Length: 196
Ligand SMILES: CC(C)(COP(=O)(O)OP(=O)(O)OC[C@H]1O[C@@H](n2cnc3c(N)ncnc32)[C@H](O)[C@@H]1OP(=O)(O)O)[C@@H](O)C(=O)NCCC(=O)NCCS
Image 1 (tube, rainbow, N blue to C red):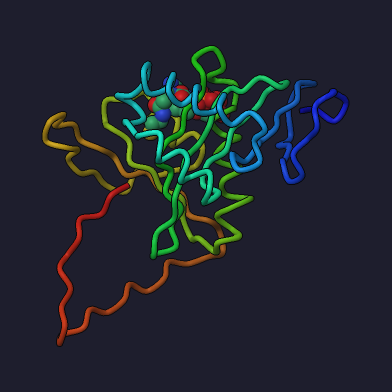
Image 2: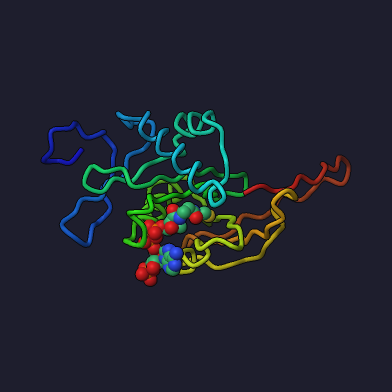
């Protein structure tokens, strides 16, 4: 999938800047010519790191593909990781899963995925912040502050696991938080617990 290679490049794939002669490329799942490889990688991620990224059914990846909420990162044509995200009514981009292959960690791949999310999606949606819930015992809590996120609070995870989860957020500069809608006194709506 490189410009010089024999594969055809998807029309709106984006190349983040690479600090080496290697090539980094983001491919949106809906344009992914080898989508089955992405699903296989997600299976592998869940099998090996499900306690970090959570467990999602296959349908979630297919829905995220259709809704343009899933993309992969390639290094020299090698698929090294992916991110699955969503947005909410408060114009926040929520990182639901981010995963990098073990042999490809600590060389800025995670950062490249998050930067693409902000540049290609969050700004287009006029989102004002990125956010992620992260179980307190994970090494990933060392990743988020290094890429500009700050910890805003915590909550308990599902009772079965009883782990605290930290909320990490990164504002998107120049945009401000929207006003929360004022609840109507005449027809109060039940309070719904927020998910990541
Ligand atoms: C968390 C994860 C996505 C990070 O991806 P990565 O490609 O290894 O991270 P990067 O190389 O882009 O790291 C960016 C910065 O975070 C730091 N960092 C990342 N992981 C770290 C760790 N485990 N310990 C200390 N620092 C870490 C890097 O040193 C780098 O800092 P620097 O720019 O100051 O040098 C990856 O470790 C992973 O997939 N983990 C398993 C799944 C998981 O936990 N997902 C997150 C659940 S919320």
